Image (cartoon, rainbow, N blue to C red):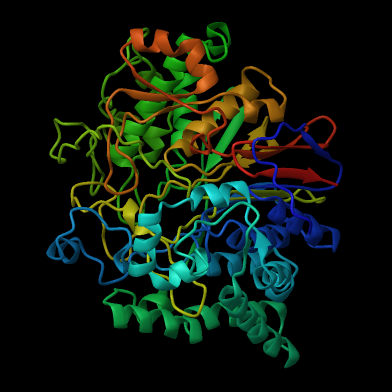
Length: 604
């Protein structure tokens, strides 16, 4: 593969007649296309792209990562979700964290590490829908990790640490510094530097070799894949993870790893005009997208004008209403009774729509709504462990302090991939994790910091509980139009993800933009709610705008009562949306990739 960095470049909508990939990296897009050219399907290609993102975007979706997934099975015509997100270790209790003096889950610490999810997800998807082996889908990623690759613009930007940060990184986490800074604490990574991930390549090769041993003995492809999973969760890799946690005072045990499992699920969905918008369940924030769109469905957005002051205000308030409900109710549904049927009931959305205040900012996060009258069988009342935590400051939740002067870190720690094959199958996957916690020495494994999306407040829906999943920000999406597959899409961006997704969908659905135009158009971002990442900062009444949009509507929004912040155009904190549309009339594939990242869409 040749090095090509499309960051901040204009490009046309990609087109294809057979298959297409759109990912956060040119390398991952090419890896997916190569697999499909070799006869693999979308599920094989997506896993090849996932592993390549673990290499070329290692600072944003390291291995093992979380892997929330939606798939479209063309044969059945159905969308399914896979929960590829790890759980909290059995020893991870709020009391334990409080006893250590933590008010929120810390970064730079083994206590921020979830059980790893992506190896399980990868094997499950390949076993059920794939046609290739792990050895086949990992071959190109192993090759690039071993030989090294040139550092692109986004990787260099995301790891552009100050001298003090580099020295601290090297002292606190020397193995991380060896891998990500090449042990060169005196200089940051520069654009074009070669980064080699030799230990990660060796780990993957050992997993592939284990699979090949099973196949050589006459085992099936499925048995070979199971051997890969067992090698990770019950074999040598598990031993290395546990040994490091035992040595350094971490929490993960062999029992945690051996008992971990993701699962298939029915997705959530909501309706906007002729479009059905799918999301994973409430262990992620994906339900915010259909909830927001249903709130907006009764408003003539086209009459307001694209990105006019009234449009930005109206969409922002709909997002803030949905985010208030996210804070009050959404969490791992295996631990919290989420009133999701009520939340996604169009009548509830209509009730929430009535609370929009034309021409006047909320000024603080609005109160959560009451979805229970719209929840079948509830009689209008909460039941069981349903959450009611988001009314600031009236509720029993601790009042959050407003951040002063600091920009929130709203997520440069995620990637995205989508693939559609010639049979019509599709995968939408949002991999994520960042090397802000100690890596496992000698393995190249980065277990990330996703525990920081738990709360140490027992009254919060996303409160830390052993075996529970945090309510994560990554959330892949899919869309049907008039009952048929129409689009697969998603983005990195932390709390910006759902906001970018809503804005791009409205650009397509309401303003009928060309796909690439819809992705590149200026964006806005509200931060008028608690950040999902610890320490969960909150900036009441604040909205951020890309510079071009700020120049057009910034003063008008200030007059409405917003605190308005200007950011650079095409700043990657505003997301990095990738999408693939299947034209309902011609069947032709159209792809778009966000210039805010090094994203790329390409078809055949």
